[in-house]
Amino acid sequence: MENFNGHLPEQVDELQKIPGVGRKSANVIASVAFNKPALAVDTHVFRVSARIGLTHHARTPLEAEKQLVRYIPESLHSIAHHWLILHGRYICKARKPECDHCGLQPYCKYYKQNKKQEAI
Ligand code: SF4
Image (cartoon, rainbow, N blue to C red; front, side):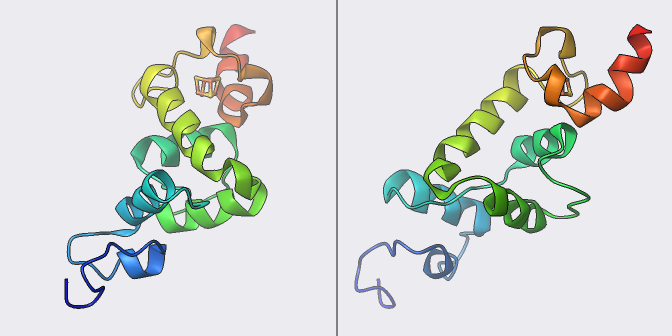
């Protein structure tokens, strides 16, 4: 209330100054509430991006975010976040990815390195 005159800031850097708001939440707020090009990296986005090969040796969500926004067009940042989350939640699950039902097989680094060998 004091720092932002009672208004929620729209920029990710400003949002992170609010106690309890980390980078992921700031990106979600900027993207969903203010329609800014922001790509939040949660556990699903982090895992799925690494498996597919959209990120390379990212050690933290911030590293993953920086790699993703470098290659995904800005106009798609918001929706890419949702695509990756939903894909991670329903198909590319943490413990057991459902590669047999996944349309990304031909493009997926994890599939090429692991599952393809099993099928041979
Ligand atoms: S092929 Fe398998 S590992 Fe790759 S994105 Fe699909 S479910 Fe995930």
